Amino acid sequence: MKTKRLMMIAVIFGMAMSVSAQEMSESKYGSDSVACVTNLSIYGEAYKQWESAKFAPEAITSEMVNAWREVFLNCPRSSQLIYTRGEKIMDYFIRTNPKDRDAYIDTICMMMDHRAQYFPIDPKTGKSQVAGIMGRKGLLIYTYNKNRYEEAYNVLKDAVALDASQLQGAYIDAYFKATIDMVNNDKAEKMTIINVYQELSEVLDNNIGALAETETELQTAKEDAEAAGDAEAVAGFDKQLEKNEKNININKGVKNNLDNLFQPYASCEDLIKVFSAKMAETPDDVTLLKRITTILDKKDCTDSKLFLDAAVKLNELEPSPESSYSLGIKFFKDKKYSDAATFFEQATKTENNDRKYRAYRNLGMCYENMGSFSRAREIYRKSAQVDPTNGEPYLLIAMLYAESSKQFSGDIESKAVYWAAVDKCIKAKSIDPSVADRANSLIRSYSAAFPSMETIFFNDYNEGQTFQVGGWIGETTTIRAKK
Image (cartoon, rainbow, N blue to C red; front, top):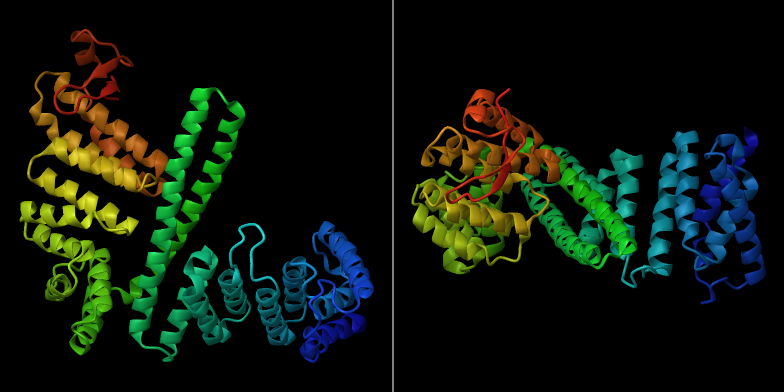
């Protein structure tokens, strides 16, 4: 125990007091390449053994730690593994010696700074990875000691400013939690939570939008490979699609978590109070006006006078798809669907995928309310193209089908719309698990409207047989009986 205690102290104080050793030659292996290569070998082999032992406490050695420390101090350019493995070593010391936790966190911070200094470019992409490294630094600070939330907040804030696209979901989650801690401890005003929420929501929306585009491209490439009979290429695209879908779900999960964390600060009353004061201070701040209209829309606070005032002002100062969207919301609430449709059509020109999706969705609702079901379906399909991972458009189409049942006569024809509606609900939940509960509820409701087995039989049909739904729907479905 005494030996391990001395080993821990050596790591903390030896590294903390030897910062000047980092100022060295440009050589990858430092001024003493023989010593560097030797220590790389010693700690590398010992680390692999420790890893094989599942990082058991009894498998870590002072020789490994000392050799790793020498490599870190004297040849920090030799390998990025110094830093990724160093995280694991520091994690071990934090867990086994928590009273020195902050000293080890300081060492981790130094490691991250040096990694950003010596390995600013990601060798896989050829692009900067500094923002991602700083994001990880902020995450580790917050993870190991939430009392250091202010430090984590500032590091993560800078990382977002550098390049938000490099931030993984866990970094974004930690940043927002640290922001809430700042406000709860009176180190930032409540508006900070709103601003950071909007900023991070946009980051996640952009991530999801980019991934959705990638999914469409991969799906097209896979179909081309299938048509060419290239099984190997198809398998490769399947793997890429699986990875892409996993990343989409991660981003959506973080976004849902952000919404849940924001909820206590997101009542319409609170938002309107905070935003009204800000708008009174700077009524011509276009960025603020966009933030007001976007967040009040997301939180369904669009009935307020503030939303209308902000939408009108934004349209005066900077006519754009965003301002058109906000006015569309206002006219839709007033049931002026034709006017709303005009503005939502303009809003679809936005480059923001989330807003584009919502503009198309709302435009479809306008046509639905005007009784143009065929046009509404066409628009809902466009919204599905914008976000192919979202099941909501298919639920909206399902509800259109069910709503149009009175347009059809006959025992079978009037019921066939419910088969088609259920088909859409099944598709919705197959591509988007988050809508499964809504989809299953609609399926139960529509299945209850299926014809009986007797009705199917006496109309010369069989269950399981294909059926062409007529009228504007024009889809092929499967005959099913009410259970």
